[in-house]
Image (cartoon, rainbow, N blue to C red; front, side, top):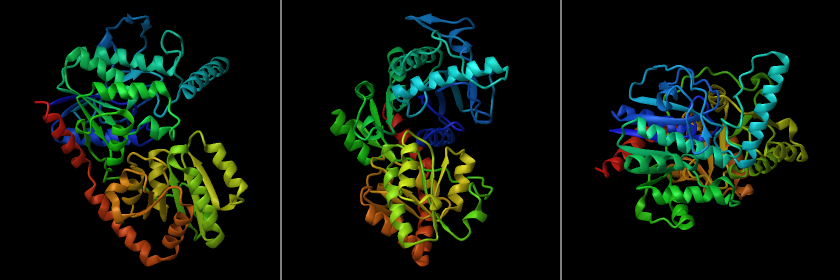
Length: 444
């Protein structure tokens, strides 16, 4: 069986859980003998030694630039390279789509690239920047989504496949184009909805694309029961059309246990970690409020907020207002290696998300034996049960009390640590792949 899969990020260049999930899913599917063609937008990224085959767009559109419906295509995706996994092939499409992008951040990204180009030209230095012009990149995020859809149409004509599998809204139009051309069944995979990402302040255009993709799909995969319920209630989808398939976590992680922060500076202090996008969805303000309460009662602790997002500046200001600067650290965006090092040196991981369809980061912490506290408003809480501490995201008093309990009760913390390791052993990407394969087989 061969799957044409559309995504919007793939390791090593990831901004959130979607890229991690796509990698885990594709690796597990190929281990079952399923062939996967993975289509991903990219913007001058080097995917290094990723286990994929990278193919030039010349192979899709021909060596000359193609024009259709007023959209011009140019450039290339780099030289064809064959890596270790023969069953996984990747198309990297020149596009300015990035995970978790909004219309505003799209424009800002274009402007930033133009500024870098200007500096490079004036200085004579060779910066790695995407080439910007009106012929190649759209004037808006929605135009970029349409561009991606057009390439999806070409790829569906180039490749033979049995099932189309699309991850989240940016890919849905491309996947529907592929379905219309090929007549093959379409599975849309909902990792997050516009209601999750925006805390309810939705973009109507994105909502309509999500709804369109779900309506056109032959089957919908939701990453949790809470996500399935949201899809039924907010998008008016028949629940019989939706299957719940949980995410998982990679087991094998090569580590060099060194500190992201200077361990000598931290001395004997415990480390409580928040790692994720610093956005309203992730509840960073509740983490800071809980930290403030904990620090008043327990001094030997450092709180670390790792990641970046539109609320970063606001959270730094909030932390400063609470006068906990000497006990609180912001790391900014971290590489995968840095993330693993930080997980390994942490004593507790906290995910206070307001609306989390699943949430892979607690599992990443748990594979290091780190106790975790997650919000009840998360999909991963459905899997973890009493293997983690579950709290309502808004209940800062209970959250701070739970943090103090883990930091001060060594026996309790040790029990949670052991539970973490055992829980991760049973949460496997192979189970996810087998569930997806069972869905694919229903079409034949």
